[in-house]
Amino acid sequence: MSPIHDFATWVPVLRLLWESNAETLAEGGRVAGRIGSGSWSLPLRRRSPRTGRPARAEDMRAEFDAVDRVRDALAESGADGVAFALRVDPAGRATLDLFGPGGAAEPGIGGPYPGDLLLVEGALAAPWRKPPDPVPDAVPAPTADPGLLERTLRAALPDTPGATEEEIAAAEARLGTVLPDELKAVYRVTRACWDDWKDDPETADRVFEAVDCELLALDHLYLADATSRPARWEFAAMEAAVTGPDDRVQGVVGSPGWIVFGDNGGGDRIAVDLTPGPRGYAGQIIMIGHEENIGAELLADSLTDWVGGRRREERRNRRDRATPAVAYVNRSALPDVETAADPLLEVLSIGVRDDEPVSLAPVVGLPRLRTLSAYAGTLADPLEIAGLTALEFLELGPEDWRTLLDAGAVPRGLLAAAIMVRYQPDLPPVVDLANEILGLFGRPPIPRTVREGDLGAEA
Image (tube, rainbow, N blue to C red; front, side, top):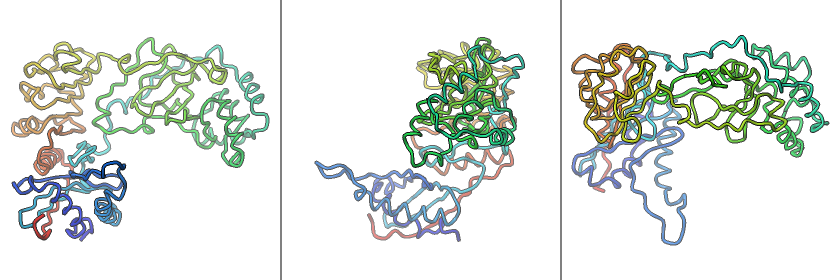
């Protein structure tokens, strides 16, 4: 038996849960949580530290030790995490339901409930399947000047070792693309190898100041295509890859023409863009934000401008990028589905509203509508979903999923799905529902293992 499925492995955690949730468990209820290799979520009532001193690790020592016991078993089993539900009678007889690891469901975020249900192996959301548009007529900015750029950097970095032509050619062969002349100019001045200045932090600082970013070593350059920017389906499906006629940067997830050469020190990547938008320049400098899934921000028209301090002051937030392709219907956004209906609509999210449940009739038959996410109780008739023939991702509450399943009306063109849980419903029925959806598509279920044991005297 796998150690993660051994009841004894869980006893310290279960006793803590019994103590913290005595009333709920005494009434026949269940508590649930999840323990993973890097984090855990447990419904525990933690003691406050004594007045006048901050919380200390010792205050949670019993929890840490109990969780570590489970995490050691996870490591021995080669698993990333496991969700569980616990029921305990007044005498301490416990029933422990363990869910996973395995199956075709991603773990949920911050709790025990299933996350994305992967209905087709390896399927990606539409924006991740969209390559950048070809730009055969794109030209460098008038300010792009490799010679000036190289002279400027040599004046600032007279003693740093530069890359040889052979090293630059090797980088091009590894990437499968020709580096733009401006980027070659940078690496001819400095190859940005840590071994060159590991004992000389002042040189490292001068390189940062000269190029205004943490410059990647030549052999660490990479292409920021869509695979370099993975996202969970529940987030990826809510995006739309849209590029407007006046955009300088294409609104795609990634591009083989985005050559990443630096970092801003906060996790955002700096890249040369060889596949610009309709009004952009080949070789412009962009920032790929680590908090966003799609698109990039224009920083400068050229590397010469970037190093010379001539920056673009344009700052675009998500509201600036609103398009008819993505619509949110809720009390603070669009008022109704009729307003959202548009031939370009790809993503429809229906959230908390003050009015009556909505009909999907206005969007039935729209050719591009591939994502629907709807809060529980917001749909007047969930069976109208059958008219959304292009759906790839569907997120509903348990009751609406039950309506579709009972009517045999789950769209069979789905690539992924999600169950939207609110107010902490009982975990096992949610897992059963997830497995029923997975079963429709011939996908492996979330494994369930039941263990029973005695936790001792009443807590």
